[in-house]
Amino acid sequence: MTTDASLFDFKDSYALSGDQTAAYRENGHMFLKQVASPEEIAAYRPPIRELVQRLNKHDKPLHERDTYGKAFIQVGNLWAHDETVRRFILAHRFAKIAAELMGVDGVRIYHDQALFKEPGGGHTPWHQDQIYWPLDTADTITLWMPLVPISEEVGSMTFASGSHHLGHVSRLLISDESHKTLKQYIEHKQMKTVNYGAMAAGDATFHAGWTLHSAPGNPTDTMREVMTIIYFADRTRVLEPDSKARGNDLVSWLPGLKPGDAAASPLNPLVYTRH
Image 1 (tube, one colour):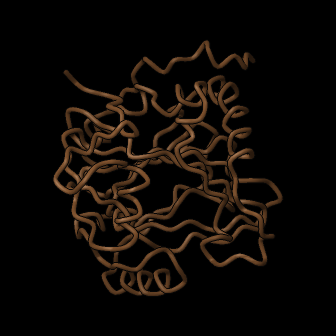
Image 2 (cartoon, rainbow, N blue to C red):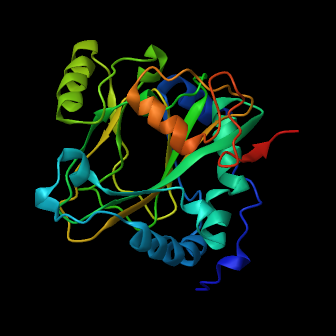
């Protein structure tokens, strides 16, 4: 199997059915097989892993971290640090899926994140991603792709179907409190929860920014290596931050922009347009 990443440019398309896009819009999440091929993952996993190891700032052992710190090693905007990784993150194929699932003409990158859950790593509490994002749109979506096979006991993320239609449910940041409160909310609302179970490397889930979700811990002795990419609809405007978290994100991921500006900083390239 070749491991030359330069041979793979992701310029082709992934065929989505009308049923798949309709199901995504109804449920707020979708599982797709082989969004990246085994050959592509074999080529791009080594440079991604190397970059994560180089940029990882975790310096405490697992047992000394808080719940959020135990959930995963988290490194963002890998695409800005390495030309090979950039080709993976800015892939036309991935971005086109994101645009088609949302039903928008074009998408920009908000940022990427490597989420590597260590052996023995803790669960990821229930939360909504978009409480962190100062984006004036509901057209946001995250690709979540394992770079290694994920067993049934680890599984995908768990999603509360239809929760994205509710919009902003809680201001709670990812924490023990968010897990307890939002779990109770989901049970009270009798929402269906879905975990897609085992995933192959290169499979992917997509979920909306307001979709409630969590993830199990990692009881295995291997690292759960996942790459995520967050997209938002082109022509989105910057929202006035209404929390410290959104203010921090404005500085980090939309540098130099102010409320009302087009969300199009140099860190937010247009990665797909239908026109």
